[in-house]
Every structure is written in structure tokens, then in C-alpha cells.
Length: 207
Image (tube, rainbow, N blue to C red; front, side, top):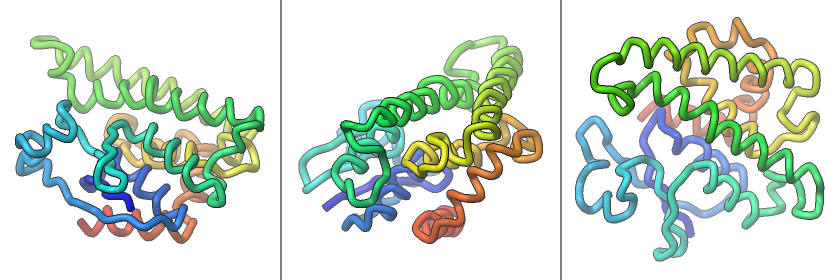
């Protein structure tokens, strides 16, 4: 049994979608970040960084980092085909894309949304540079998707596409993302059209 601590519009959406795609039994605990619940002692005991999401398995095992959650869920539910088999070389590309999204693109986005974490003075410069970097990364991903897509692994859907589609909805840092990057829009449309993911997207919008 999984328990996912989540908040709408956050990085919890990707593991939430993976749980739904896998048909896993899970419970949700809403974290009201606007009310500062992520900074309360009981939440910091789960994630000292005070970030969402947190995933608890069978009431004891606790982990953070949404990309890692996606990989673990894929491993624990192989029938859902959220990742290539462990003996398939495409597994390497699956890891590669998830790490690129979480280690390169997502940090650039967070520099845009939280420039004060990086400087006490020149926040405008941090924001501007972050926007440039986000657009550059999306441009490279879009070029790959237009020539080798429609998914990050070609014709094969995976949890990496879920993570990519989630980040593509964070558009304040890259206005008109879908107009500028049609390959990315095609991927996002395909991912969001999946019934399990459509359910989670609706829940995020309603919360």
C-alpha cells in the first residue's frame, strides 16, 4: 500500500500518475503548501527539505524525489510497462531522460520560480537566465521528439513521458511552450489523453 503526500500543481503529479497507471492501491494526503503545512515539524520529519512529494510504502518505507518514485513504481509494477525491462538497453535511455528532466530542466525551472534561493540581490538576472535555460532545454527535447518521437523512447511510452508532460505544464517560466515546441505538445497531448493520467490531471485542477 502506498501513501503519497501531494499538492496540486507540484512534482507529486508524476508519481501520482504512475501509481494510477500501475493500478496500485494508494492513499493520498494533501499538503497545503499555501498554509505552510510543508514546513510543519510532522512533515519535516518525513522530508527535512520541506518539499512535496513524499511517498510511504507499507507504512514504513519513506522516500522523496519524484523522479526516483517514478522509477521505483515502474520497477515494482512491471506489468504496467512504465519502463523498459532491466535487460533492455532502452532502459539506459529511460534513466537518461528522467535524469535529464529532473537534474537539468527542473532545476532551471525552480531558479525561475524561486530566484531568492540563489541570490539576495540580483533576482531579475537569475529569472532571466533561468528562462533562457528552460527554453534551450525544451528546444533540444523538442528537436528529439520531432525526429525520434512521439515519445522520449520513440514509439514506446514510459514514465519519463509522464515526468516530461508534468514539467511541460509549468509554463510561466517559458510562455507559449506548446506553440513554440510542437513535438513537446504532441507528447503532452498523448500523455494527457491516457485515461489514468486524465483522471489525475482533473484531480490536480479540482484541488
